[in-house]
Length: 387
Image 1 (cartoon, one colour):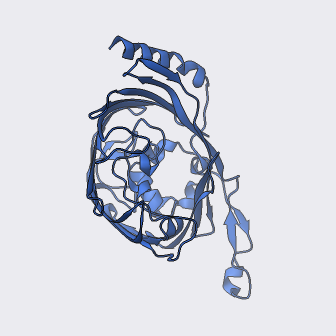
Image 2: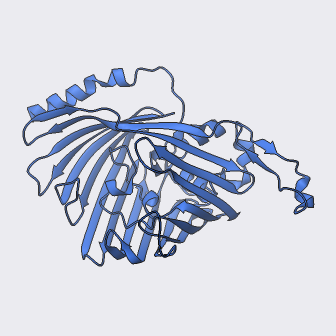
Image 3: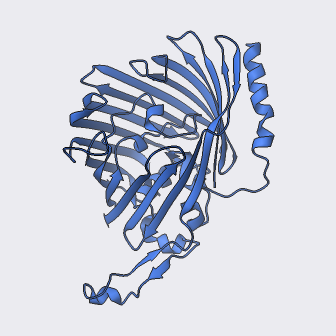
């Protein structure tokens, strides 16, 4: 126990040097556009609050048709509005962001303690990403990222067909919908115990509605693994959710708020998933899953289950979050992967953690991994900074 406290004190000693700043900006691109904090849409990146869900369901625009009114930075027009009347005999007008639609995201492990042999390790930011996001015209949005040292660029183009109806091209799938906070600063699907196979690049249709509570439905297809594929529709997936109470999935308002400062509403959301692939992704051709999220006051609970049918592996995950303050959250998580992994020697673990937003765009997290079927436990301290 004394060794653990030595590790914690050593990590805390480093904090003032990491975040020595009197001012900071909200994250990242949309925060600048609307002149607001990242807490407007998130309770802890990448997890979204009630308003963040509505913002996403409206094609990354302010709900209720108030996008232009809420924007602090105006779009730059490309062409005259009168061109719309003479189209197709003129190029349909549009607009582009009035600022460079870029942001920088730095994340990594600062410190690690391994209990098996009382070993310590200082770390450095392990990942640097350039994030980009923008709205173009009345119904086009783009977003994505490029990570240093990795091949390719993550990209998604979103076309808003109607209110709450969006067609997305590019990176598609389940992973961004799973909203575990985790002290671990990244939001990759493979960092969570329950993450159904990814269909890769493709197209998906999103439909959402509800002025109070509401529903969402996603159906899509992708090419599966690899840069090239014999079948661009090799993988297919469906996700459906139903929200009981709380703010509307389309309006971002209504319902009863449990904690206004972080946008937590009192609600219960149920979700189901289905994945099918002809060639398979990592050997998996069929998978199903379900999840439940309940929020009340300053507390949030999540339960998830996934079944990889071909390999007969069942995965579980449960998390309880409590916001002591809007900037300080305690996390208790249990995860069971069903099997060990390439970078993970254990099958299941109980993980207490804590996350602190030292500024709106600077987060520090720590978690202690108590593995049930491994010879050692691990303390990890993480940080993330976006601007």
